[in-house]
Image (cartoon, rainbow, N blue to C red):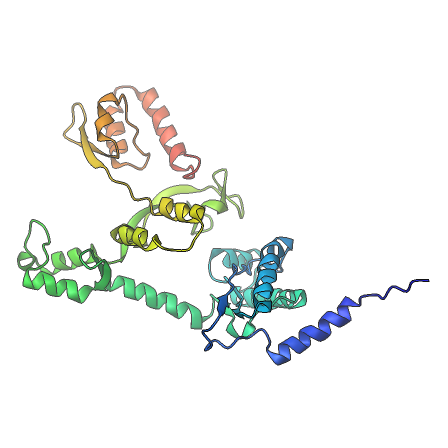
Amino acid sequence: MNIIDTYLFNEIEAKWQERWRKSKIHSPDLTDSLKKYYALTMFSYPSGDKLHIGHWYNYGPADTFARFMKMKGYNVFQPQGFDAFGLPAENYAIHHKVHPALSTEKNIATMKKQLDSIGAMYDWQNEIRTCASEYYKWTQWIWLKAYDSWFDKRTQKARPISELVNQLNDGSYECGDTPWNEMNIAQQDAFTDSKRLAYLGEYTVNWCQELGTVLANEEVIDGRSERGGHPIVRRSMRQWMFRITAYADRLLYDLEGLDWPESTLRMQKDWIGRSEGADIDFCIDGSDETIRVYTTRPDTIYGATFMVLAPEHPLVDSILSRSSNEQSESIQEIQEYVTQAKNRSDVDR
């Protein structure tokens, strides 16, 4: 008669996981730079009260590979953390009528317990929580650095705004039709603000009046908020942005030589979206205004038969107001369509 030993995983795994914790076997010597390996996975959102099987589909293979590298003699650093700052955590707290600090802390504790029970090779001594002031003070620091910087195309580097002002004062930097020394303080401030890497600008967002907030595209379903089903309006709002186009060439240049899959490099290049073309102004019959169109193929404009304006374009309202007395029924239909088009997501458009 064969005797099959039963694997008492609750006892055996708990015993060894406790020993791993006490010995800090998963916390590498970060000062040892020889044969090092950095294993990084995505951080989970504590906007739910626990992990699900989809998380382990991500964490399991990554942890297996990290263990494989450690068995090959590498000094493996595999941190873990929680992306705990933003709308998902806020929405969870609102839905459960609890302060977000309390719900986030509780959800993180549950998720850490689950990750520990899995037995993953995480270095909890270097845990990241994006809701902690020790973390987000650095994102604020980065933003302040961007606000106080401009992109110098000659050096292809971000430089302090003070250096730009010095160049404007000594005349080594041209600022357009009006010389720098002929501008008043307000004009000079406006010019330097137009060069800052972090700036205030207009951007079309998904606005929910009922919730009193801006929603991400994935939080909008069929023109309504995912939470509560409230109507969403696409509107232009003044908000802080980054002047990515100023250093787009530098982003592309820095992709060269990276040991990344070709598909990943292609996605990065497509995201940067650099193209070469021309701005062409088209006249409007009976109007002094023009429509500016960017195209990468100006040689094909002679075959153009019509143009389409975005529903937010300022010319839409002026054209409709001029035509309102001519064909009231058609104008009303167009106005209804403009409203409908404004509230579509970017993908639906």
